[in-house]
Length: 315
Image 1 (cartoon, rainbow, N blue to C red):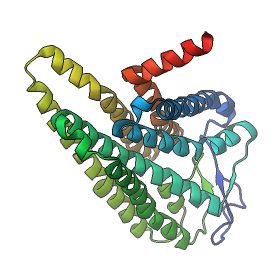
Image 2 (image 1 turned 45 degrees about the vertical axis):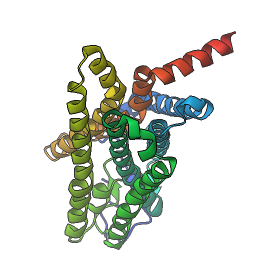
Image 3 (image 1 turned 180 degrees about the horizontal axis):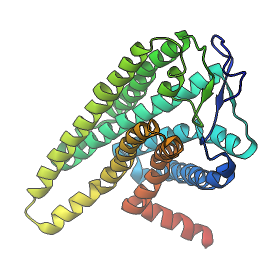
Image 4 (image 1 turned 90 degrees about the vertical axis):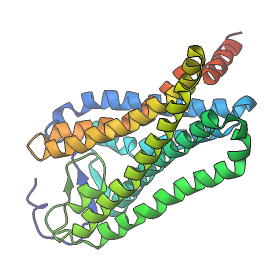
């Protein structure tokens, strides 16, 4: 840490993002997998959006939610990767205070939105499997639009206090963030004040919002699995389970990395900071990268449309 950053100051105009602390000499090599994941995420999610838009048979609630997920993934990874790659490639570490807060907002807002989309997708699968005859009357376009709007507004509104709380604290110790992007806890930890309000609110959002999402998703798939196992024929059970297999896979790809992120942040306090930051970065980028791959592999309608798209172009 430089001497100038140890001097007292109030509310710095810029923060310094370190990237992966302790691995600065390897930043170029580390950037290769991150850049590859970003390209896969962009191409995969844009392809999903294009296929759903151009294929009328996919204009249904499940694929609308899938498009919402793809848009969320695109915004989430784009809010992080360009600045991260600038740090790795050209050592562009400075970020404006307001830009840092805006990046924090996008990361937390759209991470929460993604969690809400999984709740909506779980509800969609529950209605499709447990109440198939009423599917079209329950999940109307109007209800789908309201669910998507509620998911966006929930994240947008609940994350706003992060910005106000982070802005009000005095920063008089350092402006160095030992990560390649701005998160709520990383920023407020730099404050030289009692930040318990920020910590308690962050815990409230994590446990009362994301925790409720996990409960609702678990309830939906418990009811789905119970309905599947009640089917009389084995082949019918397998076929029905396959229809929600991709949803389970993307949900696990989102929440399991989040668990590892939480654990790695605790390891960082014990001296393995670079490991903690590296794992956190991978966990943030895994869902946007894996989601289109999982849906492309496991969803027959998307596979068929992709096959026709490529064969038509070749002919």
